[in-house]
Image 1 (cartoon, helix red, strand yellow):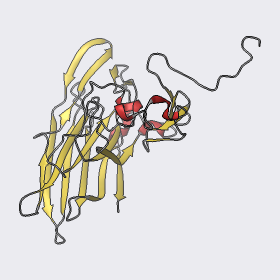
Image 2 (cartoon, rainbow, N blue to C red; image 1 turned 90 degrees about the vertical axis):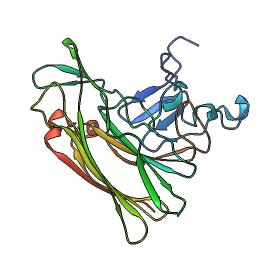
Image 3 (cartoon, helix red, strand yellow; image 1 turned 120 degrees about the vertical axis):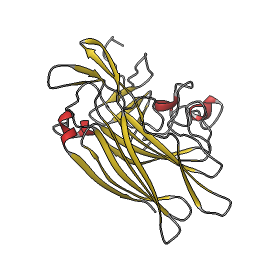
Image 4 (cartoon, rainbow, N blue to C red; image 1 turned 45 degrees about the horizontal axis):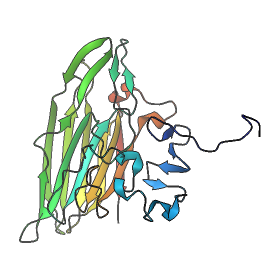
Length: 275
């Protein structure tokens, strides 16, 4: 057979073991396609039981895209047995982002992920029940956590945003609660720039489960909300009982034309209902 005449349907990135395909929004992993938006494989695993276990990805929480690094850290703050945890994250999906004056800042270079250590702003809370069976809401940190702001062109400057926040837990007549969270984080390099901001309400039923998420956030960067149940969900704890569910995802880079940092002057309203 002549060289170069055989079509090879498998694409492989030797450095990372997978390839991101912007046109489809999918990862190409060996012989399969993976959808990060639904956290589902689109084809069956061709190796079958040859790996010694029907589920050859058990070691990485059934998700080799996000959990191939066993030493990573997780967004899930963990909590008491039976607790439900929620995390809001704002992140820059591109590797870099250019400002109007020509400066270039480092981005987070990722897509939706249930436990990525890269973000602009992040805040999580834990929902559990006390001895009386009443819902208790506790925040993992007093204030939202913020990622470092770093110039890559020209190099040499790095700063930290100072977040502002407000949280309210409002009891409802049906035994549930509304958890209302507001937060902002301004660019420490540009005092004039609008901040990354959100105001989000989580409606919890009497069992503490999320039945609705609604509110608004700034039009840039990307935003995601995850709900966690079972044992703490993290890269170094791939328990099959752990579960991460994406409640909301917004990626400004998929728009046509894509939204740039000027989107900070606008906002996005959303409302999601869950059974």
